[in-house]
Image 1: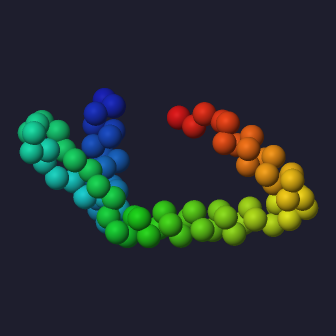
Image 2: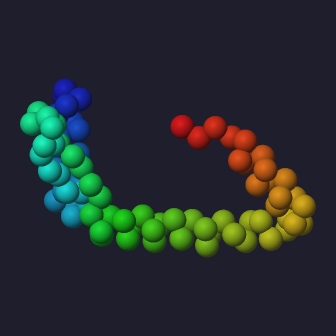
Image 3: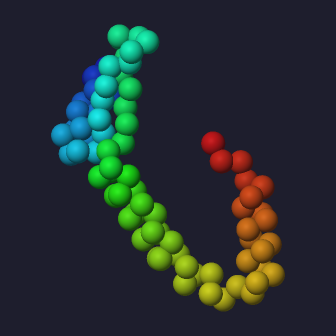
Length: 80
C-alpha cells in the first residue's frame, strides 16, 4: 500500500469517528487543512487527566526537594 493511501484511509477513519475535520487549503488546492473536532479535544483532555490521576500516587513518596529536582531534570529534556 502506498503511504499516501494509508494516510488517506487513516484520516477517513478519524473523520468518520468524528475526531477530525478536513477543509481545502485556500492557498494550495492540492492539500487539505486538518483540525481536531471538539469531541477529539475533549477525549484528549479526558485522557490527559486520567494519566495525571493514574501517575500522581507514584510521586507520593518523594519529598518536595526530590520533586523539585525531578522537575528540574525533566525541564532539561529535549522534547521533539
